[in-house]
Length: 97
Image 1 (tube, rainbow, N blue to C red):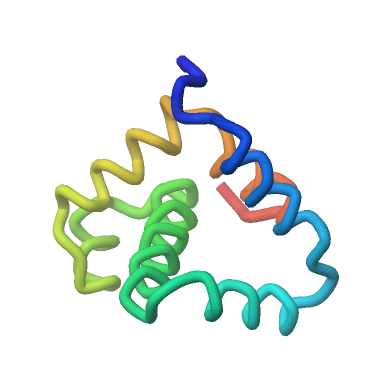
Image 2 (cartoon, rainbow, N blue to C red; image 1 turned 90 degrees about the vertical axis):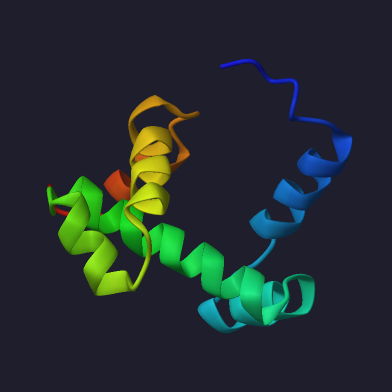
């Protein structure tokens, strides 16, 4: 994928994430940097990625998360054709397929 989205500000944010050591630290940072709506959106996308990766049908994922199938389809697209971030984290977390 083209890396035109990546700049020094994105790299700086990535570096900030890398210094977090605990779940509580991560939660505090995310709450400070994101609105509640943004956090909810991020968590829904993450849950959708986990469910799609596990083989759950898109319609069931949408129903479980109270999301649209369009959102689930977008997440699935990035899971399969994105930068590999979803897959990397899912594999490192030992998420079942």
